Image (cartoon, rainbow, N blue to C red; front, side, top):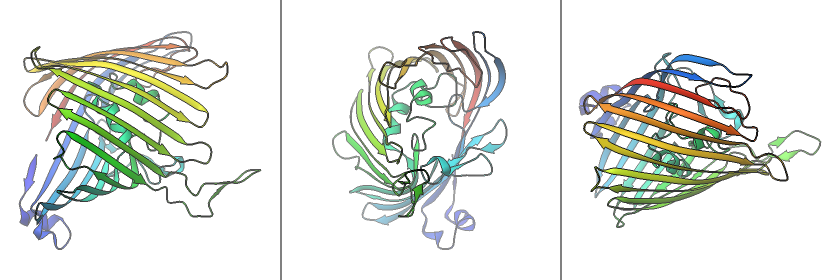
Length: 368
């Protein structure tokens, strides 16, 4: 990471930033060669140069001003990068489907916040990660990156990647507990869809969408030495049916056994009348300057009545070799299964219902 002096930061920032104690430029550039294939009568395969297969590529700026008495004001601007094409990731401006903004120039869609922190905790305003996202990201050895090993619950669930508030929420006010509570931690968030009071969804019976995109969520956890556990729940209001999610994640590090970290998550969500549930179990095992990681995850849609319940499962195995503190090479293999009509596939290829998909990737990651 590169730190600018106060004088240099003042040249690049708005007037009055001279009191800033520091501004940091940081980022990750991650690229991988990926091969994925489906199976069955309707299937395809693909070679790709992908990005973010180990860690999401990003470019960001953050800074802090010491206000005295243990109180600080901070900002954080972070943009996702698709370095294989030189574009950024999109964002969402109102936590609703019609608020999606496509990929393009520099968009600080990963995080754009201003905050005030101190002995009372931290109050944070702007676009930020939702409390219900963190367990899916932190209790999976592959996280929620763009690679073929990443959390299958995140990619398949009703409240995951495809949901406007599945990862982040715009127009949010958040609060974080201070890190002085004997291992207890927590996050609260309220976010606004910002619809006018007279907004309606056209139809034979117009529905009010005044509250569409309003999100409320919370996460509480306990970290003590090798043990970590957290519970989160959240709700996003929509006139056609609210999106709800609850998940529980936990991990334990066996320091006496090479630092093996075992982790898991149980996940439930619903969108209107459709429910879903899933679970994950995985591990990280440090080996010399590298790390072996593996996970198995499944997710099932439950539409009710006697309808089929599409189910997806995935096993992933990976190895990361650290060339230095900032650079690493890695390899991942993944196998995905479908049942009861599901037709999920890896890496944007096609697979027939109730057939599988598999893939491999080799990549390089550099952080700065």
